[in-house]
Length: 146
Image (cartoon, rainbow, N blue to C red):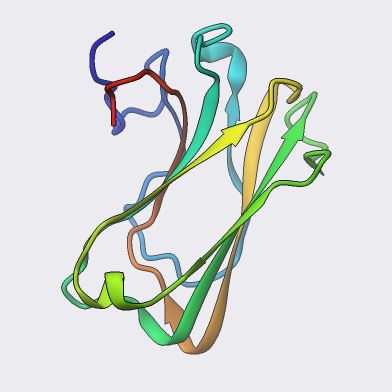
């Protein structure tokens, strides 16, 4: 299987929830949603929510920035609920970001999700926390792609 184009919004293998064109400075609720029927059906190794914090010479902003990514699903694309059991992932700013290193997180998505998926992205910390150009997308995982 060839490498995936993670810059595309929907190319049959990757669905973008946050494209990273703007800084992540405030909580985002269901800003973007993905129709899972546009992704390859039943990927052999499952689907993953991928969070990429790119290296940034200016690093994160604020004091002790934190980020929580919570996955939600919907049958109709308008009524959202947390996955059951709930899935959220916490990321804390620290030495990796200060050292200008990219961070990549891969969160497995359960097989029982409904047709649409979205995230609630919460930012914490003080003094104007900022995670810069965070990207979040859904993709099937194929050995050797990452």
